[in-house]
Length: 301
Image (cartoon, rainbow, N blue to C red; front, side, top):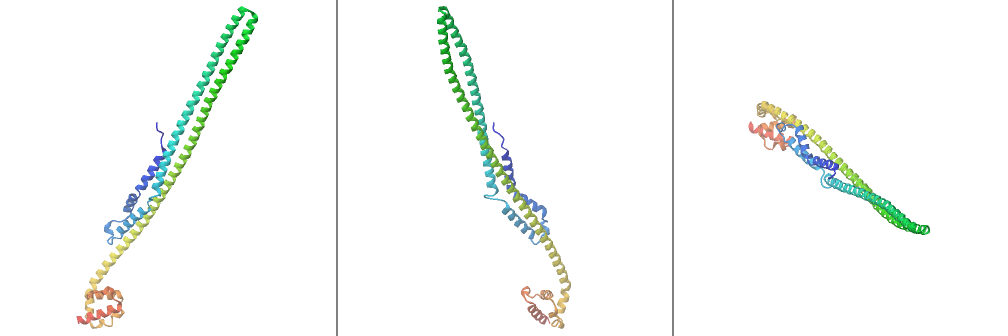
C-alpha cells in the first residue's frame, strides 16, 4: 500500500495559484475600473492593457516559482522513496530478529532433547555396566559422561555461533533501517523547505501584482475623471463659442478691431481665428494670429 504524500497537495495548490494569477488580476481590475462609455479618450483601456502587461511581468517564470515547485515535488518524491526504503528495511530487520529468535529457541529445544537423550544413554550404559561389575560401571559411567560432555560442548558451540550470526544479521538490518529512516527524514525536511520557498515566492508575486493592479486602477480612475472634466470644459467652450460667434463676426467687420487685438489673450485670438476660418491657426504665434485676423478683417470690409 502506498503511503500518503502530504507535500504534493501544497506544491500543486501553489502552482495552480501562480498559473491563475494573471486572470485573477485582470478580473480584479475589471471590477475596479469604470465602464467604457465613461472613458471617451480610451485612457482606461490603455491602463488595463498596461496592467495586463505588468501582471504578466510580475508572475514568476523560468527559474523562479515554477522551477522551485518542480524541485519541491521531486524532493517530495525522493523523500517518499527513502521513507518506503526505510519501512522495508525495518520490516526486514524485524523478520531477521524473528528468525534469530526462532533459531535460538530451536537450539534450546535441541539442547534439551540432546540432554535427555544423553542422559538416557548414560543411564543405559550404567545399567549395562552395573550388571557386569561395580568397577566397570564406574569406568563406563565416567567414559559416557565424558563423551556426553564433549558432544554437548560441541553442540553448544555450534548453537552459540548460529545464534551470534543471526543476532549480527538482525543488528545490521536494524542499523540499515535507522540510516534509511534518517535519510528519509532529511529528504522530507528538504522537500518541506523547498515547498515553503516556492509558496513564499508565489505569495510575494501575488501581493506585488495586487499592489500594481490597485495603483493602475487608481491611475485609470483619475484619468477618467480628468477626461470627464475635459469633455465638460469642451462642451462649455463650444456653447460659449456658439453664443459669441455672431458677436465675433460683427466685431471683425468693425473698424475698432485693429487696436483691440493686442490686449486679447492667445486663447481669445484663437477663437477669433476660428470664427474667420484661418487655416493652421493652432500653430501660429500670438503676433501671427493678430496679423492673420487683421488680414481677414480687411478682406471682410
